Length: 143
Image 1: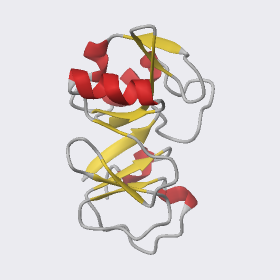
Image 2: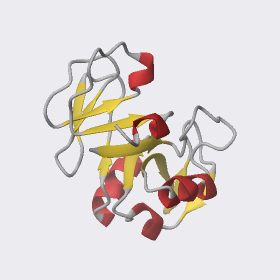
Image 3: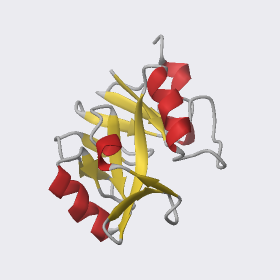
Image 4: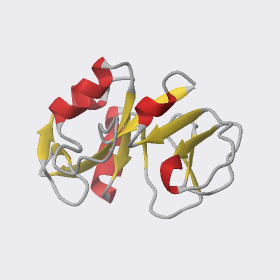
């Protein structure tokens, strides 16, 4: 099962550190994959949920354990060009990532190839899917 840290969080939300490359690297060092929020402006990549926070090299985004959430149309196009693993969604029940995984909105029915997003805010009785993306991903490490 894929265990994906949401923005670098492992044991709860830390708004001050989310999307910070150092914070993300700590999650990667703990053997988690990481979902990051990506923006593209002035021919540069940035991490940040609501605005450009951390300029980042494209090599960072090409790490096989990074799942890039395009936050702008410019980021979507740029991520496609560099062949990163990316997706775009807002409140869609499901969206496909560029590698064919089903990114599943919190609380929606899980499918065989689903990535269950933020199960902590949904009341799933059972999580039977391909992966989990969570702010509390450490909880699922030994399941």
